[in-house]
Amino acid sequence: MSNKEASPYDNLLKEFSFGNQKSVEAKIARFATVGRGKVHVLFDFDRTLTFNSGGEDITTWHILRSHLPQGGQEQYDSFFQKYRTLEIQRKLTQANAVLWWEQILSLAKEHAVDMAEVERDFLSKANVRPYAQELFRLCQENEIPTVILSAGIADFINIWCSRYGINPNIILSTKLRLGFNSKR
Image (tube, rainbow, N blue to C red; front, top):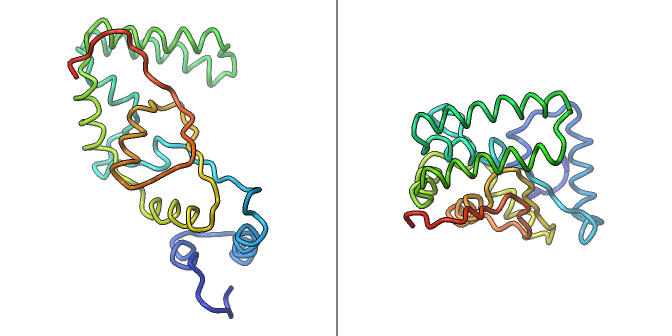
């Protein structure tokens, strides 16, 4: 690509550091020619596509936590500490994971969290990473399917993608079913 005509990837490439830029360029060129129908681009969501310019740690779950009253936040932190420790130690079972999120969602239900307010708060804090929109657009133009795979909350991911004009082919994420009428 260096001695050839400008590529649509050039603007993206100059923003990153590579151990071997020629190798990266060759892979991108190969994806563009043989990847169609064979390659999917997989993205994480929280802290990968999003960031907070104020430096605050923003994830869909952190925002939900922040809308709980103090006692609910303390319970949330207790659940997080218990189960995250198991996760880091690679001892988190599927049953533990289900129990963890059931307990967190029960807190939201118990405290009648206003999910519309949580969504507004998330949108006000979770900015799009530089060049993420261009990367999705580039994939779309080259018919490369995009997938967001996240432990984050799908409801928030969908509205965030809509706000920033990001159109993944698939979002695989946690769909909330709180079983109560939020203040929406």
